[in-house]
Image (cartoon, rainbow, N blue to C red):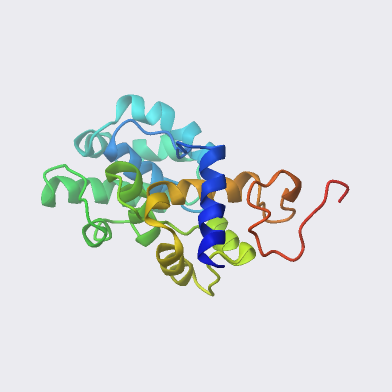
Length: 213
């Protein structure tokens, strides 16, 4: 996609939603990290149902360690892969206390040392908690990058690198949220809602849908 089109693409998303926000519930940087770890292969809605009660009693790594793995499982048992996730959350909480004085590290490399934290999770935390211009490529962004022609790639990392290179600096702060929300609600997997899409003029997708089908 040419530079002018890319600028128009993001400009249109910005006009529609100037201050996009993630949909995961959290109360501080620690609970954000926990929520993102829990959201792997799960919906934000499902995670929020579990974490709203949890984050009323647990807001710090110390409180999570005190809660313990068994009680944590009771809170998150409606979330997929909850056994492994509970183990990781307790482990990363111990690591934060032992290695980082209870604080959330502000670099991708340090975040990825924590149990259950991969590149995508680290990028989300860096973007939301610290305002860093990272782009976390999930299924929505991977689909969007390829379908629109904005950043085609065969792997999430390839799409991430292309998005970072293609996205103008002025849009980097919110790019992740604009793209994920657009992919979730408009450029949907089975049937994109092209008639209401604000970037359809810039999009290179050949199979655009119409109002009657």
